[in-house]
Each structure stands twice: as C-alpha cells, then as structure tokens.
Length: 134
Ligand code: THU
Image (cartoon, rainbow, N blue to C red):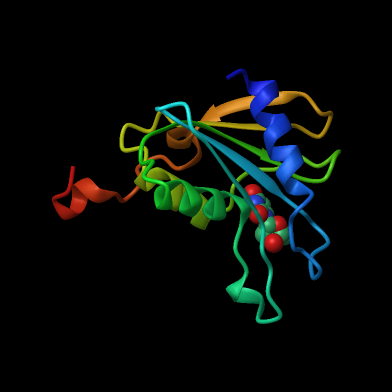
C-alpha cells in the first residue's frame, strides 16, 4: 500500500474521532506485515489524562487481532497542521519495531506527505531488549 492510500485511510477514520475537548481530531492507519490494516482515532475523556491518541488506539486494535509486526503508520490531523506522534506514542510504537524501521507518515503543514521512521523519532529507545526480551 502506498503512502497516500494509507493517509486516506487515516483521514477516513479521523471522522470518528471523539475529541470534544481539544477539537483536534486525529486518525491513524497501521499497516501490518501480513497486509492487514488497523485503524484508530483519538478518544478523549472528561478526565483529560484518560484520553487516548489515535496511534495507540490503532496499535491496540492491531494487537487484539493478532498483528505484531508492522510496516507503516499514517497519521492524519486537522488540515494545515503538521502532526507528529507524542512521546508516549513514540514509545509504544517503538515497542513493536525493535529495529526502528516502522515508517511514520503524516502530512506537513502544506499538506505534503512526509515519511520518517520510529527510530528517527525516538532514538535510543528503552525497549524489550533491555528487559531480556527480543
Ligand atoms: N493526538 C493524537 O491522537 N495523535 C497525535 O499524534 C497527536 C495528538 C490527540 C491527543 C488529543 O486527543 C488531541 O490530539 C490533542 O492533543
């Protein structure tokens, strides 16, 4: 699947975001190595810290369906705003990309798709290997 198609998936699920507090709806589409696609949107809460980012919702949905190896995640926020995963989501995504090659795709402020990798977003991550898991 090409980056623009994955971004379209993220943009579509963004419409389901529950973001009444921030008014910043986000969608995420996560492509697994087996070709399966998993979606998430942010789900906020009146108890603000209980809110979930789109990326972690997508990852949880994927793991619940048995996927653990991923190629790319596309993230879509409001048009005109460059979006990038928060620190917690970088850590959580990094857990499932021990080699750091997970591609992270999002549009910049001009709407141009940009791709980076999780290791570029979170170099030197603490991960499973440090706990003896590989
Ligand atoms: N948010 C995401 O879901 N993903 C991101 O990459 C950035 C931020 C959410 C969290 C919160 O619900 C809202 O956007 C504003 O921060």
